[in-house]
Image (cartoon, rainbow, N blue to C red; front, side, top):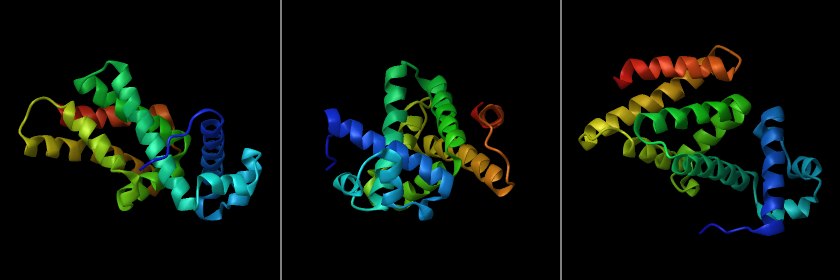
Length: 182
């Protein structure tokens, strides 16, 4: 069960996570220590350990927070159907453009790690819930195709050493989306 943080504890946790995100993207996850995070966050190493026992625990918290933010946005946006699905992916592309290597690692970690409370599955459910009425097999096919566009696009950019330029990625995503959505 996740611990709820409020007030100063919540702000401290956010500061740690924000510092870690920047460092992970700059140095790579394997090259970041709790000392680095503590220095960047302006806290002691012990304080970091009060929130996260391991780097992996910190990664799990980051992926859960990213997915929670994305799903909260979906709920609060008032969008439904195709408009919500598009916006969900466009926001995911924004995150990817801001922190490309970290986002990829977080998604991969989420898929492999059971402690992430089904983060990717929650995104897939949000997509499926906003697809037109269809039988479950067709919804599953559409979810696979739509998420596949995102994963494929990110893989293409990584494999070809391309810059993660958000507007270009969004345009390419939407063009591919249109090719299968209708």
